[in-house]
Image (cartoon, rainbow, N blue to C red; front, side, top):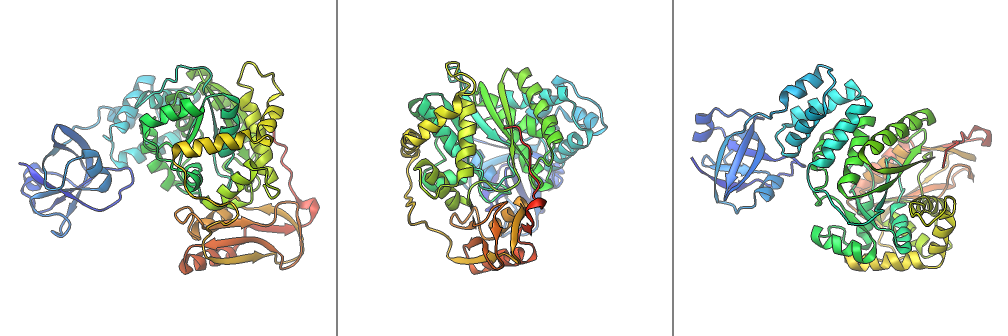
Length: 511
């Protein structure tokens, strides 16, 4: 019994959802249940979707099948086209999922079957959540983490650049303004190493690397064009959302983020599977440590490093882990335009360039350059500094920007959000702590990253002496309502701790 396809304008974020009216003859005949999986077919194509049942003909009529935005785009046929719907077969890996829920250790084959079903969207959100929580509570052992990483890397596209080494850099995240990738890539590419950097958009942060790069250039580069661009310019800074690299990871992230689950095992699998699928042979991994970072202590950072090193070694990936200071934001700006300003100031050797962003980027780039067998250990930093100071990194970045599709950007006349306020020091003293999470929340309430000119401009850092009523940071908000939300949040807690110099807690990082 064919139904007419109807596009339902609902963003279901990486989940295919189908809509049937309760009075639909097919719904009653087949005994469909809400939240069950159905298979939708048209023109030789098929997709799996989660069924929602509606009672309003304004959404879906009695003879129609509705599809959410993602599902409609994936099926790829026009509205009104006849489609057929049937019950989907249960995922073959459900018995393995049940064993993991019961706390059992799974085999390599178990993980391959589960990941295959996840990538093919055979799992409902409930089943996905059960898998994520079971892995979190069961605390995967290191062999299981390898099995999961390997399985995720094998599903979807796998790139081969026919070159060695292929280098990449990744940070586990959690530090606002940490846009080192946009400096490391042009430095490393200017030296000649191949560095195809695909980055993410912000999900819970005020800006991801792709959001900041999008201020300067297009980041949604068609996959086939991306390969030629990278081979020509030796690097890119593009959005990885259309690359189909480790697609199961994208599905799992859609469940993990709302639950605020970021267990070590799932973090390792997410990062390493993407890098292996992207064809990387060498990876530099940045683990920031701080009281308001993802990793709060040095022992925790060392344990995570050992797990990354074990799994990377089993997967044949050369890994260099650096543990860095995550006690405060990097750079001056938090938000796409403000972060792009910081990056371009460093590239142009501007007198107001943030020194912490410059120095951290040079150290990371130096470590990456030492993946080149012709560079001796310890020489990378000096070479990276010469590439930056000489203007070669700027030239390379400009070439990459032009190749991806340049956008207007005036470093001297920034297009910042119009509604502003400053947060002042409540008393005289020294800045002894900055809450990364609070400042990130204020920047998001102000409109970042959706409003590119919104965010937080830092005017003081840890160790700075401030006077009473001296500005600590300036907030740029897109709309009056967002100005009010950000102001209220900053009044509840500014994110800055003012005290005495001997109260500053120094981090002995291992950079």
